Image (cartoon, rainbow, N blue to C red):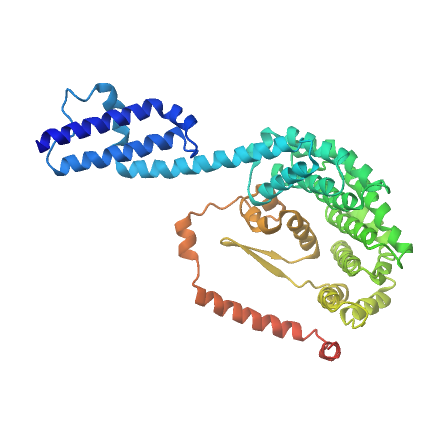
Length: 467
C-alpha cells in the first residue's frame, strides 16, 4: 500500500509540475507577487525534486514507465540537479531586479513630460540618483535623445528647482556617455540653451547657478573644439568679472553665481593650450586678487584656488615664472591663512584658513598638499591643483558615487589615467579586506601624523583668541 501511495503522489506532483510549466505565463499575469514565469517554474521544480528524493530514500521508483511521457521527461531533465536550480534562481533574481530597475527608470523618463511640475522634478531627481550611483551606458545610449529632449523641455519651460535638476541631469548624462559622438550630440543640443540662461539677467538665479556649473563640466566632457572651449570661457568671464568692480553689498545669490562661473572657468583652464594660458595670465592674474576681498567665503576660496592653479600652469610652462605683485599677493594670502576677524563666522574662518595655507604654500614654494583617494583595491593620488579641480568638479555631480565611478566608469578612469577597470570577484575582495582592529590602528597613526603636520602651519595664539 505504501508503494502504491508513493507512486500516486509522485505522479500527481509530476503532473502538477508540467501544468505549471505550460501555464507559467498565465500565472504571472494573474498574481500580484511580481514573480516571473521562470521563478514559478523553479519553485515547482524544487518541490518536485524534494518528492523525488523522498521516493528514492524509500527504495521506490517515483513513477512507472507508463506514467512518464517522453514530453514530460524532456522538460524535467534540466531540473535534475538541485544545485543548478539554486544557481539559476540567483541569476533569475538578479535579472528580475535589473528588469524592475529599468522599468522604474523608464517610468522616470516618461514622467519628465508630466503636466505636474512636482512630478517632473521628482522624475529628474530619480534619474540623477540612478546615474550618479550606477553605470547605465547601454540603457541610456538607446534613449539618450529622448532624455535630451526632456532636459531641453524642462530647461525652457520649467522654473527654479526644475531647471536646476535638468541642468545637473544633463551633466550626468554626458558623464555616463563619456567623451564621444553621443555626448557631443547631447551637448550640441543643450549648449545654446545653457548659454542663453547664463547670460539672461532676468532668468531664475538658481537656474543660472546650476547652468554655470553644468556648462563647465559638459564642455570638458563633450566639447570637441578647443576654440569653442575658449568661447565658453568668455561666457564665464562675462559673469564673474562683474565681481572685480563690485565687491560690497552684493546679493549672496549673485555672489554664488559668480563663484560657480569662476570655478567652471578654472576647470576649463586645465585643458587650455599654452598660448591661451599666457593670454589669460596677462588678462586676469593681476585682477583675481581683488576677489580675495569678497565678503563671501566661497568666492574667496574659489579665487584663491584659481590663483594657485594659474601659478601651477604658469610654472609648468616656465619654471622661472615671476609675478610683479608677488609680495602684495603673498601678504593677502598670509592674512587670509591666519584670519581672525570676529565679524566672520568661526566655521568660515576655519575652512578659509585650511585652504589658504595650501594656496600660500603653492604660490610661495610651488608645492601641493597631496591627497590619496582609495576605492576598492585601488588608490589615486591628487597631487596637483589641476587634478584637484577636475576631481572636485566630477564629485560635485556624482557625490557619494564617485568611488564607484572611479572603479567602473571608463571615461572617468581615462581622465585620471587609471587604465581599464579592474575586475575583482567578491572572494578576492573579502580576502584583501583588513580587520576592524587593523583599520583602527591605521586610522590612529594617520590621525597623529596629520595632526603633527598641520600643527606646523597653525597659529595657536589665533585659535585661543577666538574663544
